[in-house]
Image (tube, rainbow over all chains, first blue to last red; front, side, top):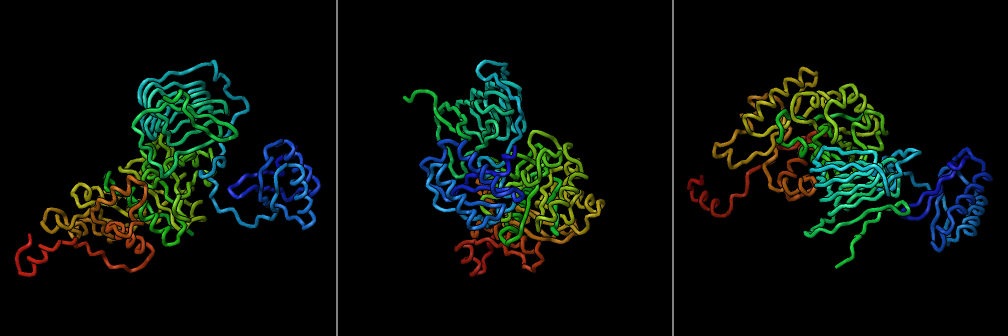
Length: 227
Length: 266
């Protein structure tokens, strides 16, 4: 298992492939192919600028990688260049969705449809942490600075303005539901999102919302029919 | 080699956190690489004042306990290049960190940054001891109130007992009109008691409240008098000679007219 010698990384500007320097070119090529094939239709129809970093490739090798990507991925590959830009120091912290990886366990809590649940009554205030190995229901508000961590689903019957982490030991199927969903930060398994910086939500009416993870992105939607 | 500066006061609510945010941002504006450390574990605020609250994943306690690497916990400021925040933990207390761990942390950050500003919690207990442990210099913040000056005096004594010589004094929230009327301590009164060098005077300014609530330090606001004061303080920290800010407020037309005719304006 030397999968980790080739890493695909999506960025704002396209795709970056990170190659381990000590690896031979043939094995790299093989691994890229395996990765692309295992991604299935993921790249299909996309048009990509591809960069690579780590191992230096010759012009000829570049061409081979280019052709491989072009033929196997189903995406239109517009260019393949070496990424010479140094990654900005310490930048990979919070801004991206995936960068700060939270360590996940191999066996995670699975009882999100039917499982052990904790009920907490009262307001979770700043500095308070309610955590539970299972589902968590808070009957009350969660204020900014308050924190909920549950290995299953989190339901807040009230306003959720603090930090919430559902599926905390790795279950990406976990959901977060609140009558008023305005968390400072919302995490499901190892996916992290935060509220936008400039947008002041001035809604006065409560809309119950549900957050879930799909393709490593958090989606938030109403779950009641709109009136 | 970076320099570690602790910002402390003894009394709460005099503006340590606001000062840390503004000086830190001011230094970043001058092109320095700066990290702000919030050591107020359990009552963290600096992240809110900087508007970075929603980016916190790991914090100071995670770093010293080895849960994550320093780089993972550093939050890059959303506006200024070279400005970083190491937030405090909120669900823990001051005893989660020891002075030895702070010294080690500061020493590691020294290699990466030009300035490490440590926002100290109020009080003289564990949190204070942690905050000053790794510091090279200290800025003591006070307001022109007897109680705040008394606490600042106590703090200066403790700093000197901990080998932090020559702390600098920052007088915050001064109101020139009240000083003129004799209702507020003057800068000279304060220096008379504390007998340390003044690094700056920041006037009471409504804009500070606005900027604090918005999470945008006032130092970036070119129209704010307090912002100007913080910019000057930043330059003095960097060793420049900057004259003290003229805090005379604009008296308005009528007062000027009266003065012109030699009438008493009080």
